[in-house]
Length: 127
Length: 417
Image 1 (cartoon, rainbow over the protein chains, first blue to last red):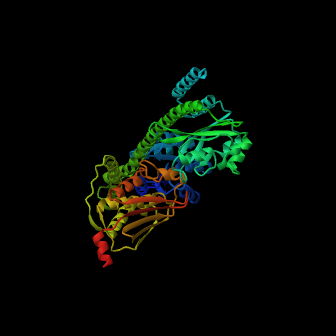
Image 2: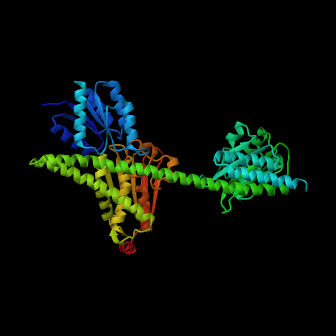
Image 3: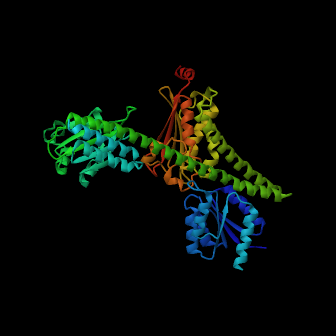
C-alpha cells in the first residue's frame, strides 16, 4: 500500500536515512535531499505530497525552502523540524517556520510516532 | 581669584552630570560640552584610542562641537603619523598646544592645516585622556577661531575633566565588554542546545527502528551504525565542554613524550574524517618533514590539529579542498591547515581565537559546532610551548592556520648528522 510521496530535506545523512527507513516501513515512498536547493530540484522532477524539512541547512536554509515551496507548490504540505537556533530557542524558529507556511512544526528530537501521526492528520485533512 | 569659585562649581556640576549618565553616547556628548565650557572654546572633539589599529593605534572621533561634516569626516579616524595635534599627542603621549596653527611648524603645508582653515580653526590644544590605571584611552581637544594660548588654570581644570572622562570611558568600555561576553554566553547555550538536539533526533529514530527490527538483521545493523556515529558526535561535544572547563581552570596537564609528527598528523586526520567526508571535501596531506619529532602529548596535539581540520571542514562549502602541510624549519615544526572556504572577514580576526565565537556570515548556514574549536586549539598548542596563527584574505577567500612548535632537539641532531 502506497500512502503517499514524501521528500525529506536534512543536512544530516543519518537523520535522512533513519527517517527514510521509518517512513518506508510505514508505507510511504520517500526521496531524500541534503539541502533545500536539491529538495526544490527533486520536487520539480517528481512532486511529493509532503515536504519534511530541517530549518538549519547549508546552501538554502529551511525557511527559504519553505517560502519557495509555498510559492511554487502551494498544494504540498510542509513539516518543519528544528533543534533550535544559534541565537534564540528552537520554538521561535519553528514559529517563524509556521508564519513562512509550514503546516506542522516538530522540535528535534521528536518521537517518530508523532511524525507518523502528523502525516496521517495531514492526509485526513486533505481527503 | 574671582574666577575660582565659579570654576569649582562648574567642575562639580560637570562631574555630577558625567557620573549620572548611563548612556555612553550621551556621556561622550557631555564630555565635549564640558570641554567647551571649561576652555571657553568654540570647538571641541573627543576621540577614543583603538590601540590595535594600524601602526601605533588610531583615534576615532566620538563626539565633536563646531565641526562641519567635511571636518568630521576628515578626522573620523586619525592615525599616529597624522600632522594634527592629536596625531602628535598620540605619538608623544603628552599634551600638544598650537596657539596659532598658521605658525605651527609641524602643520605647515599639511592637509590637516587646510582642514583647520576650512573649518575656521586658528588655535587648538589636545590633551591625552589617561585613566587612573595609567591607560591611554583617547584624546580631548578644544579649538578656537582666533589665536589663543590657554591659561595654566584652564589646562589644570581640563586635566581634572580628562582624568574623570578617561576613568568613565574605561569603565563603560569594561561594562560593554562584559555585556558582550554575557551575550556570547547566551548564544553559546542556544548553540549547545542545538548541537545536542541534532544528534539526539537520529538516535531516537534509530532506537525506534531497533525496537521494530525484530529478526531484520540488516535493518538492525543500519540502526546500530546510526547510533554509533551519532553517539560519537555527542561524546566529542561533551569532551569539548569538559575541556573548556579544564582549560579555563588550568587543569589540563600534558603527558609529553617524543612523538613522530607524522603520527600526530595521521591521528588528527582520522579524528576529522567524519566531518571532512560529510562535507565531501578533498583532504590533501603534504608531509615535507616525515622524520620530524616533537615533544608533545600525542592525544592533545592531535586534538588541536583535528580542531583546525574540523574548522576548515565546517567553514568550507561542500566539495572544497583542505590541505594539511607539515615542514621543519629553523628548529621549528610548522603545520599548516589551508582551506578554500568561507574565509574570515577582517573585523572578525581580532576575536578569531575567542571562546564561543563563530563566523557570522556562515553561521546562518549552520556550520555546526560550539564555537570553541579554535580557542581550544590555540590553548592546547600554547600548552605545548607553540603558537597558532590564523590568516585569511577576507570573507569568501579561504583561511590558513599555522601551528608552530619546537622540534625535538635529539631528533634534530640525528637529522643533522
